[in-house]
Amino acid sequence: MKRIQSVALIGLGAIGAAYGSKLHTLLGDAFTVIANKERINRYTASGLDVDGTMFHFNYKTSEANAEPADLVIFAVKNDHLEQALTDMEHHIGPNTIILSLLNGISSEEEIYNNTRNEHILYSMCVGIDAVRRDNRIRFSSIGKICFGEKDQSHSEDVLAVKDLFERARIPYEIPEDIRHTIWAKFMFNVGINQISAVLRAPYKYFQEVPSLHKWMEQAMYEVVAISQEVGVNLTEADVHSYRTILMKLSPDGQTSMLQDIVEERKTEVEYFAGKVCELGRKYGIPTPVNDQLYQLIPIIEDIASLK
Ligand SMILES: NC(=O)C1=CN([C@@H]2O[C@H](COP(=O)(O)OP(=O)(O)OC[C@H]3O[C@@H](n4cnc5c(N)ncnc54)[C@H](OP(=O)(O)O)[C@@H]3O)[C@@H](O)[C@H]2O)C=CC1
Ligand SMILES: CC(C)(CO)C(=O)C(=O)O
Image 1 (spheres, rainbow, N blue to C red):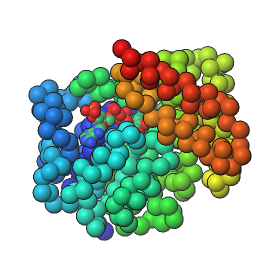
Image 2 (image 1 turned 60 degrees about the horizontal axis):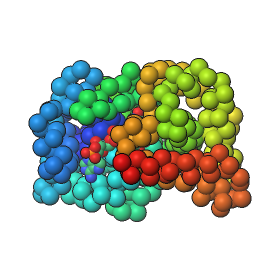
Image 3 (image 1 turned 60 degrees about the vertical axis):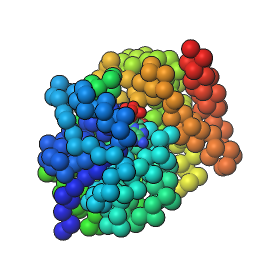
């Protein structure tokens, strides 16, 4: 069996730092964070406080003439993926396994189109409610990373990542149909991330206010309808399964999109409502809730950029 000895990660934010801290504990300096000089200076000056423990990772710039890593992990926001791919060029070799922890349904394809690497596994993380403020990362649950091959095989790459996650004590799942799993998560993000961003609502309001919960599920059902057309076939059961996940998230926690709004960063709306509206038009499926969200969230971003 392939044994993963070195991992390079790009995107030391809420998600990257949460899972990166586990990989650093296992691998030490064989776990590398790739970043430009400005970011490295920032990380080196203050360290990363992950759940109360201070971490100093092994940092490398993208210019470094590095040996390709056994595993590369992308944990940036969707808008930063293109730059991250350029920065990771030297770290990806013909045998490097790639995982993308980005939300949405497009990052694996974007990575494949850029790298032509045949070792990309499909993946996402769920149940983690990570919040980043400056150099502090907090989460009530680390959730789990779901991953697998598109053809559902338990390939050598899948088994190598499974072995790594067991050694690093990273909770994981290898679902039967990873495409279905990724779409179900997309469905949840389309509902909760976007509506939390519009209302600046932490998880507790979704847990406690039935009318808000209903609006979230209306946005999610538009993804269910589209999924029937593309052959993913999400159902009401998938919508309901996310109720359990929602109830376990920290009441005061914020979705990654709400964190972007609070910090006045660009959001991932293009990859959520933008994608839903695009596919809705393509398949002739009405998407009224996402049409509104796709107008509202960019307006919120525009207003923030005036300050
Ligand atoms: N937060 C959560 O609970 C969850 C988030 N997700 C998804 O995971 C992905 C990441 O989200 P999250 O961790 O919250 O986002 P963050 O904004 O917290 O982290 C992204 C990090 O990437 C860094 N970055 C961007 N471009 C580069 C680059 N070229 N080189 C090095 N570093 C770079 C950013 O640095 P800088 O700040 O300096 O620009 C930032 O630290 C998103 O797709 C999100 O939807 C999925 C599940 C849960
Ligand atoms: C809603 C949540 C926390 C689910 O894991 C998420 O994916 C995000 O904040 O982007």
